[in-house]
Image: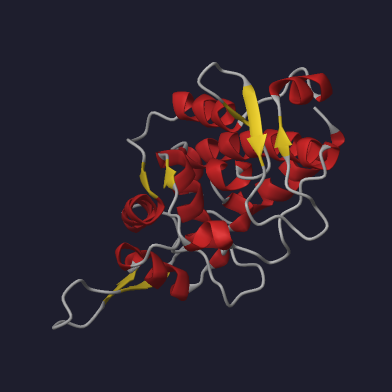
Length: 235
């Protein structure tokens, strides 16, 4: 385990430090920790790859999030839900998730915020991998084409399998990380981020409501029917 991997793990595990104890006893925090460990491995691999080949995203771009809503697994959605409820605590983000079906942009992308991704520390595999790791072609060989909007300081990259394996004999692709995670996550079928995160939020709130835990979370949840006022759920 590299030093960078350990630093990422220690930093990202802090995200789970304020979660109510009920989610530790029922295994939900453990699922989040396993996922964060895999994210740290992915981060380290992506950092090595992009540094070696000078792949750089445009500063404050976010174009990939403006026309794409990722499809994610149950554990990825659970981690995002835990972060939103017990760390971020921003009602506007819950509202954005609720309105996700009316937009083609990721509901957790904010063009007005210089950081854009509102759940960056717990963003899913596909978000971490795009323009940061190679993919595989139909023969299973590595291929990489950088984003069509490269940073000014980075020329557009087209890398061959041989170039990639020469630099990194043990390289893992976007699909390698995604498949490895999906094979361990048997919680649910993969669904669009907005839909699945809302499902996990509802589940977490219900569990907390009927537990003996003293922690609480209050969310202002919009109602589908415009003729009725939004429902306020507090647990």
